[in-house]
Amino acid sequence: MTALTPRTLRVYLTTFYALMVEYRAEIFLWAIATSLPLIMMGVWVEAAGSESFPGFTPLDAARYFIAVFVVRQITICWVIHDFEWLVVSGKLSPMLLHPIDPIVRFILVHISEHGARLPFGVLLVVLCFVIVPDALLGNEQQPGAWVPAWWRILLALVASYGAFLLRFIIQYTTALCAFWIERVSALDGINYLPYIFLSGLTVPIHLLPDGVQQVILWTPFPYMLWFPAQLIAAPAEQITAGFVIRGFGTLAGWGGAVFLVNRWLWRRGLKHYSAMGA
Amino acid sequence: MPAISVQSLSKTYHVADKQPGLVGTARHFLNRKHRRIEAVKEVSFDIAPGEIVGFLGPNGAGKTTTLKMLTGLIHPSAGTVDVLGHEPFKRRADYLRQITLVMGNKQQMIWDLPPMDSLQVNAAVYSIPEKEAQQRIDGFAELLGLKEELTQPVRKLSLGQRMKCELVAALLHHPKVLFLDEPTLGLDVNAQTAVRKFLKEYNDQHQASILLTSHYMADITALCRRVVVIHKGTILYDGSLDGVIERFAPLREVKLDLAEPVDDAALRPYGEIESNDGRTARLLVQREQLTQTVGRLLGEQQVEDLTVTDPPIEDVIARLFESGEEDEEEEVATDEHG
Image (cartoon, rainbow over all chains, first blue to last red; front, side):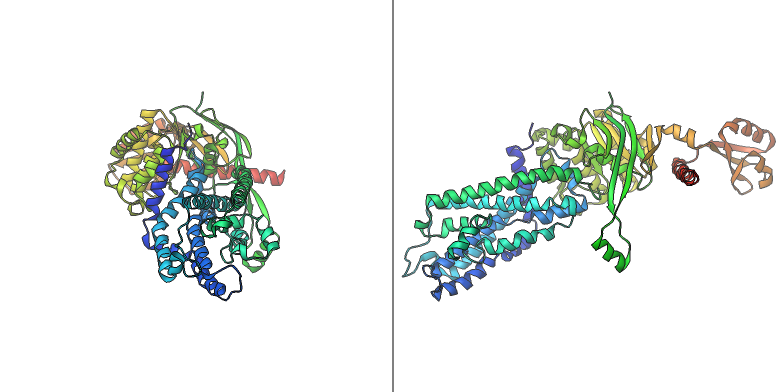
């Protein structure tokens, strides 16, 4: 009988949600800590206003970075730090003795935290709309309120959770090196630096030169933020079937490939695990 | 068929070897050296269903490493382990559902939530129906004297209360084999007694096999008829608890209450004097000469009262560990000269 049942998922989610809301001030600070897209919004609204980027208006910039902020709330991942601590302190051992793979627990901890963070995220988005009301209501150049079609919201939601799983599996796979080198969080820089510059967090990918864009779109990074954000923020004519299929296909391809490496490393790592301190 | 069968089990660790100081740090950074530590060497034993076995040894003897291999947390370097027909390190779910590991220095409870939340997670993970899980929790809580503690954050509980909750979590799925690593570590006397009583009752009700390590001999004497003594990775003794005393305590203690003061010189012919304040004396007498010596004492001295006791089990075990050290020193000496 498998331990992965709807009841297990429900109990894990409610328990970890309870754990996350135990420290309310901390969640608010976490939400604030992920507000880099809102800072970038200020920078890019100014830049777009200077007409240096033809076709990219201040309103486009505001909507894009608000969308990036929302996607980022769903895709935040810190498993590498948790896992390192669990391995080094020996606290991974009790989890290994449960008849359920710890990966389930790690994923659900993140999803619970995203749920706990949601109200604060919504609050910050509302604040953005108060500061930049045109982003919501439109202006003379781009009239009409920003209300994406339901199917675009649905696709963006699925893409955001897909993006979270991709980010998670890449970080978790790196984290598995803790079985060999223990202080593994230093390795997170290998992922984090390209994530900052190639995910669309600081620069919208579609504003980069074509050649650079074509190369970057083969990496997993744009699908961690830019792709889901574009699904709700880009003009309707840019959301083609080809764009959607390529986006989800690349997410699935990278996710699947890294997952296979993850499972291989997991088996090898367990053989190497010495259950330190436990 | 034994519940646990261990044959020639060995585990070797490779650990980094760093000298202190700046030079040592630089060398360690540029050219890291490792050395091999044989934590467990050729260990073999069986444990029957329902049997409680004390697993004794000083710090670093290889007890915890052996337990880790038996639970499947680490892979052995050599040898075979069979627990309930499973190879533990394959970590199959149907194996994990039948065992538990309790570590006195580690906890599985979620620190910031009440124990009840962790118990509900365990009930779900082990697929225990909700109603039955609640009945089991109530039953265990009653045995351990837990009530409000189950709904208070774990961080607010005392060490003893936490360990009781850990036991409930660890036994909620009614495991058939219990690996207990210092379950009473740091607990006060009352909590220790409660834990021992609880484990005894669990063993009686479920016929579970228990392998118990503890530095508190009271745990061992209260629960175990058999002990396995390990020292520097090698088994020194495997047999009954009484047998340890027979084998490693050749002396018995004779306590005398005398009608008149007697000096040491008068008592020395009977045995080794532990203490003598004139009217009360303690002598250590060879076990095989005990009957004859007691007869002589009663005939030759004015004895008001006489009691014969075994030396404390702690002393016997300490003597056993010392014998392990001496054997090793002899082996080293033989190696050096041979």
